[in-house]
Image (tube, rainbow, N blue to C red; front, side, top):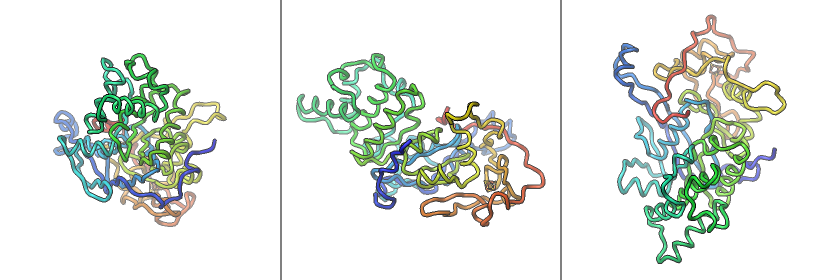
Length: 369
Ligand code: SF4
């Protein structure tokens, strides 16, 4: 399959719109759960020290299993959650907004698209109402009825709902899932954003219409020059759409680089595991990550490398110290002791005793389902 990333501009030629530096989010644990763990001040370590750049005219995919923290990163970037630590910069300027006019100004530039197009559109209002309201909230409604009508038609054309008059007075229940998601994207565009944060935007859609919505996002990247964050558990769709892929595991980014490199020559053992479980039409058995251990409990995440309880190459140091991200090729980093020590997988010395397998923990409020 030809990938869209192959037609995109060379790395380093586009501007950074949105930047996360050491982004961290810990959700406090409720009292009843604290009692179970017999400790104070416990928290779900949903996101730890995440660094991410969203560039103009490029798609960055954030990929990982359910509960890896990828949706939390999107919500932090949208400033829907207060962060525990780290910084968010919009065009280099540090920003922290909590509600009110400043949030409206920020959300006009950084828009979020949610997973469920059924829940994100109020069923009692028409497409016209949803789009007009978004234009009005962000001060983009035209002068006079004619200008507003033209702005609405333009939004529907941008998401390929044409002719616009066929869709403008429909209610959400009169549209298919794909059309509803296109209306949600049009509503996001009504704000005139520079960045779109798309949280699993096709995962609830019929397989047959997913490609159309992915192609729409790719077109918006090209035509509107948008910086897009594409959050997904599906590394194959990330390979298709994205220029850059960042892989998350247990709240941390463990590998990042050009999409083709990360998928064709994955460096981190977890990325290799994720790719081995990706759907493959040539395989008879449906793939699964089950039987290869479960993600860790994020209330008490494993020491050192958080992947070490599942990693077939784990060494003693892996359980003791967290590996730093090492650049293994231009723009391609991996946080693994194998690279830090210049070892290959078969040179690693396994742990004498495999650490006990920890159970799956809560990913915190708003985490992926
Ligand atoms: Fe495996 Fe160690 Fe690398 Fe973690 S740091 S992925 S445990 S080899």
